[in-house]
Image 1 (tube, one colour):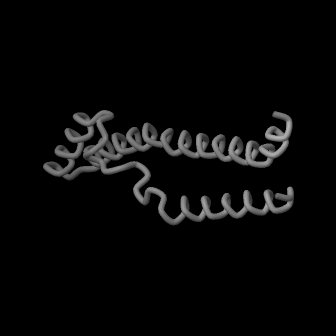
Image 2 (spheres, rainbow, N blue to C red; image 1 turned 135 degrees about the vertical axis):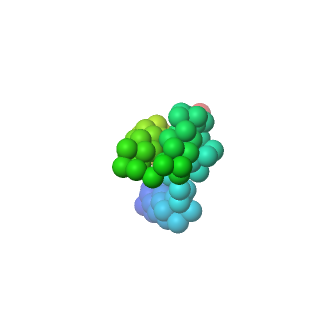
Length: 105
């Protein structure tokens, strides 16, 4: 298999993977608010207070809890993209170098 064909196949696979991630990625990157265990009690106390007593202070407390939740959940997206990038780099490297290693063995 020629090097140009290998490079083209690797590019096509990477483009298809990018399209898959864009189209079918998580539409709710921070998950459902009720399903995340991080500061669950504090978040629901703030929500209950806001629902029972609508005021600027209770809204600010609830927004602060949601901001902490989003900050906590952001690392998952970066970790996933970093691992995906590392796996792609390794796969492309071994795919392009396979013929040379096989001939040497």
